[in-house]
Length: 492
Ligand code: UN1
Image 1 (cartoon, protein in one colour):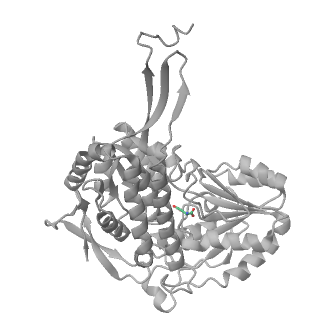
Image 2 (cartoon, helix red, strand yellow):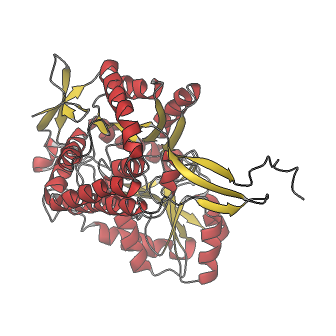
């Protein structure tokens, strides 16, 4: 199977292009070949998006939304198929793949509803016989660059608000997970989106991503990925005065206070640290535990971790699937060595899992470190794998300080029964998302998704906030006095 670009409502021909293999991380098997596109392919896609945009912007927003309702319906109809493709190319266990596809369906229906809102303001004017309002205007052609860890959900967080607001887009999916984008293109086609409204160009960040950011007709870049790449996107985008929305790394923590329900905390930690093999931006990577419950928590975590089966995510009984590729496995292994050199105590895991069929894929044992120093590299740097570090603290103040000591600020959580501690924590935790008595993952699409500090640059995905990325505010003044009225001057 060859994955070609979807441009102007049509599938590109091979035309002698280069292709790269798409591999299943569970067993190394080749699933497809994906086009390695060039700058010329990007130029073609942007030109198609540009010529479609004016017409699309003139379609009434509730009618644009009808396409999203249809896209949502098709995603629902194909949910099981999409989930299985997702598990095969990305590796997450099938139950989580179904959850991710559901997140996309939710986003379709939610943003379709925005077609009948796209709310602005009407406000009084300071002058007589004058009307003042603000409206959301589409921006034009937008560029979407999405990651492999949520290949469909994150794409919907960006593309659906862009569409309902009257923009057209060119989407570059991650090289590791082009099949979900291909499936979405089939859905866009079946839903009857006008040609050029949704365009997909496969390829590398260096070639396709750069061409998209530098293209003069692309007005917005919405990017999710590593902080390192995000910085380059912002630098290049800044040079070209682009509006750049960035969603980047995390080093998320669960705080467990001495009054916490420890059984519940263990469940929350396991789910958010080892789900998706730790490859969510929101994954729990640190547990900040009160000294009085540290040992009990360690014991309970160790006991529960024994139930975490590793294997191919298509097996319904498996809890931990593979990590995305060999480089990811090497990076995680490197951090385990760093942790040990730094004096952290390895309580469980720490090895690449190779028993039986596992040696064909990229599997990492769920790993637990304790006695981790809050300022060590293990506790400060993003690992993006099933590795969690316990850090002991004396009280809530110290817990919050340790939480906030990292350069990221995506998600945090506190387990406690004390309403005073909970409210202080939700105020003082410097992250874009805070959970109380739940792990660090599981954001719902109708709230803003994003983070502070090194996680983002002030924008948000999903929720109504996503519309801010894909619209310009236009303030409109209508003077019906029939005479010149000078604001700030003729106010008597
Ligand atoms: C991500 O990790 O990049 O909140 C997205 C969650 C999911 C989305 C995660 N709904 O865990």
